[in-house]
Image (cartoon, rainbow, N blue to C red; front, side):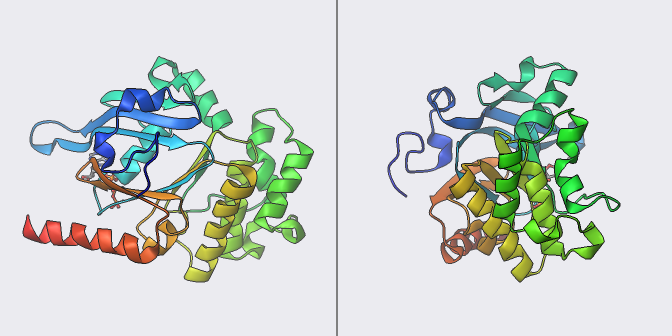
Length: 269
Ligand SMILES: Nc1ncnc2c1ncn2[C@@H]1O[C@H](COP(=O)(O)OP(=O)(O)OP(=O)(O)O)[C@@H](O)[C@H]1O
């Protein structure tokens, strides 16, 4: 781990959250984010005071054992779920200050989503699927940007194909292009390669990587797959709702080593 003024070496829990969250160049951040589901016997602390920042133009993977809170963190950070306490910012906007309509608008305009299921509309072409969210928002995507996104995705020859005429990897690349076209502040992916074989997964991950390197996109991805995490600039590890470790410039082997320590911990606890 390299020393860094924004992400000092060492466990993420040691970060000074307030200093972090006012730092320039932060696309999204949480401070002491806590999420509790249920009550009494069914009470589950899914997130326990999680403070983390996602830097602009950085690709972050979130990993950890099943049930450790990865999806909950992503859903709260993306404004899809409400924290029990603590705060979430997208850029400088504190989400708890927004009403429902403002939050919906923020999600539409500033956040992109890519899910495990491609969620494309079968009757529309690839291009129509990519531009649909802008059309719904009453905007026409800026032509040069659309061209750039489409060429980065490598779909230029297939824009008039319908989803059924595309491979799984191509469909997911359409979904990624759709997430990018409104130039969101941040793109969240929840297991975006979970439904793909390793070759198609590599295509989609390569494209996400390119969107970070060539378009300056900020990407946060939940994954179980150390190979997928190897495409990220850094990996943060959750365990029992807490951030317990991070790795910059990850490789699949090093990620796997950390994941093995979680297996050992769960067997000995
Ligand atoms: N709507 C809910 N109601 C009650 N408990 C929930 C709810 N959503 C999640 N949980 C619980 O919160 C904890 C964290 O869940 P979460 O889905 O965030 O984990 P995860 O790390 O994404 O898991 P996985 O890797 O299996 O998808 C789990 O114990 C889960 O059972």
